[in-house]
Picture 1 (cartoon, rainbow, N blue to C red):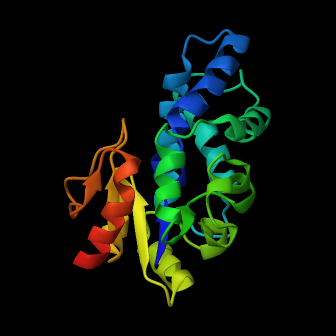
Picture 2 (cartoon, rainbow, N blue to C red; picture 1 turned 90 degrees about the vertical axis):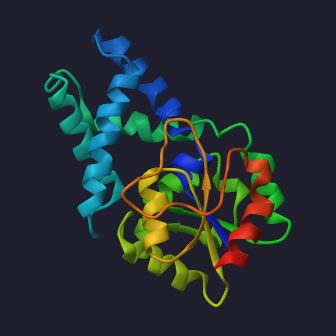
Length: 226
């Protein structure tokens, strides 16, 4: 069996990591907004753009357009260098923290299964993260590799095809990822994370855990139910 994890919600505390860098940029520019406000605006546009994105548009392209829109929303257009700021954000990904339970939790799953990542990012960005050394590099399934973006069902179908003939179980945290994976028919474990809630309009996860230490058992349970 192959188990994939979402990169920037289940494994990485992306809000904390990106907000720290954006707060630094805001202080340098004398902006009134804090890092959390900048992150929320940028992340919101990122997710909206990803809903309709298709290759050859890259994650980098989407992140840039999202930053342009976030700056415009906050009245910051013209006071920031979008390309320079995005380069700093992407470089800072190497410092974005894993959730505290990740290393031990992933290790417990690795004992019995091959483990990978299923994410909307580009390949190079995935390699830069702290999560990358924890997984099988051959199972880093990105939008760049699969040719689709979450929450499109094509992304999840491509992931299942890449895992075949092995069974695929996906560990998701964000509402759109949980819903997307379940609607695509993947066996899915919800890993509860601060700031992420399930989409009440979609199917609800049958198996969820609040600590990655419980993932090994949860993965076996969801696989048996499917």
